[in-house]
Image 1: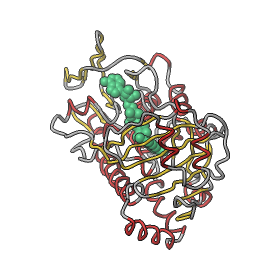
Image 2 (image 1 turned 45 degrees about the horizontal axis):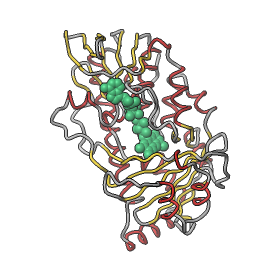
Image 3 (image 1 turned 90 degrees about the horizontal axis):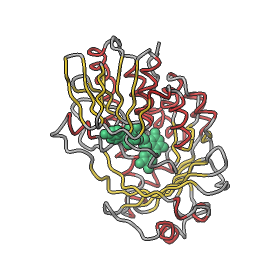
Amino acid sequence: MDGSSAVVVGGGIGGLAAAIGLHRIGWQVTVVERASTLEDAGAGISLAANGLRALDELGVGEAVRNASRGQYSGGTRTPRGGWLARMDGSALERAVGTPIMGIPRSTLHRLLRDALPAEALRIGAEADSLQQIHPGTVRVGCGNTVLDADLVVAADGIGSPMRSRLFPAHPGPAYSGSTVLRAITEHPVDPGTDFELTWGPGAEFGHIALPDGRAEWHAVLNLPAGTRFADPLAELRRRFRTWHDPIPALLDATRPTAVLHHDVHELRTPLPSYTAGRTALLGDAAHAMTPNLGQGACQALEDAVTLATAPTVQAGLAHYDAERRPRGQAVARAARQAGRMGQQLSHPVAIALRNTAMRLTPSRAATRMILRHHAWVPPRLD
Ligand code: FAD
């Protein structure tokens, strides 16, 4: 791009990746991050081929792969343990060069932060204003300091204050109907497979095996927004006590204080644009989606590479919007649909029909469906 400086608001996966991309093409980048600690550091994340390819283009793919564990075995099950679909990580690897990889979020964040010069990060700094002060310059206010730049990247997450400023008529995030509790086990466990999802009526339990032998698990429940439990782990033990192994064992291997609990929101009303003036929205700020396809962060990584490959700021932002908006919004729609047909389904007849359809679907067809989202090829970052 023809500019040379950017302020990135938000130091999550999306913001850090955008900063790495711009830094790699020679820009001076400042990331402002209001939090001093990561809210979801105790959780894990799965990265699919599209996200890993974006990380390769950003120069951190190898480090991330080395710190991850490939998901070769597992699949989708019923609460009694019957298989609805098997996952074939080797088939994915043959098709797109990699299985899905699981990594602790804190490790991914550290590797992204390490790819930036230390002076690029301002931790504990909250952006509180955004102003176009000149046709070519935008100003971000952070308490008593102001930062001027050719481009602002709003990577400030699902609740994005920047989005509210730029699109005041947009209704913002909506509750998906599901709440998620998750944790990483305290010590190594043997869950038997690399990755599983189990669907009961209006409920899902899943795990990802991590490289150090521990596992991340998550439990998703259809519940009103704001529902909280006095003892979340005890509540999950009660709800999942009759579900197949290793579910009770994973809960037993978890410290009660390690359990994170968040309601799942999404940007149900699509944004009319991913850009406004000299600001680009990126990651959850642009397209927060339900986690049912494990694609939210992968889409943020795609955004980051695409943004850094645009030739000029003006034309580049138009290109970014044209490239990213249809894709991000389509994946968000597909994720919502996957949640409705998967974890959220609660009527016994609908569940029986879905389960029969899944059992009859050949694994090659299931792999083809996954590849629709994973087989993305990044533009070159020169
Ligand atoms: P965030 O991570 O929300 O980062 C935004 C940052 O901006 C925050 O650090 C915040 O503190 C900061 N900020 C906000 N306002 C300001 C301000 N005014 N000034 C300064 N800083 C500010 N995706 C996958 O690809 N694979 C998965 O397996 C997967 N699993 C998931 C499981 C669950 C349960 C959930 C909820 C999501 C999952 N996702 C997954 C989605 C993924 O976590 C998100 O899409 C991704 O983390 C979004 O990154 P982000 O950088 O856009 O936003």
